[in-house]
Image (tube, rainbow, N blue to C red; front, top):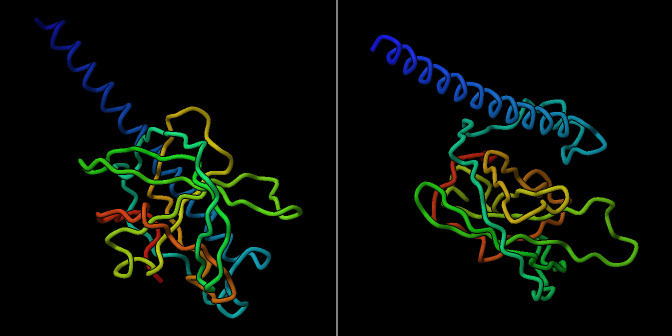
Length: 202
């Protein structure tokens, strides 16, 4: 009986240690991501802020990191999708193509998001392929930027299991300056729930 009790205590302690390690790794990842965002806004070559705004910039306001907003999603490719014009903040359009649909569960709800690639003309192609994942949710226009927030992947993730980390939601540059032209969020990516993760409104 004594040995069995010791074994149970060992198992519980091991599980708790693993959970703490996983939690610490998650928090470190989010802290590093936010530090990179802060550095980007202080970098005159990348920042959407004016020199005066950079001098006064104290950092972004974020929701508290929450690992429940990091979810696994099943990627359903949509190879037959055609390019379509997506409206921008300037009243113009940019050409995008849906590459697939992400199916996932969040807070007990079954949801989907569409993933997009920009269709760029000759001479405009970036060296890196960015998968565009814009969203609007029930915080939009309340505690977050009124035109929605963005996520992206650098390169197309391999396989059909992707990770969506809403803790990495960020504002488009249009939230900071009208010098930029930002794509709007398509209707399929309007989520009917509160996403209290990532960056808050200005």
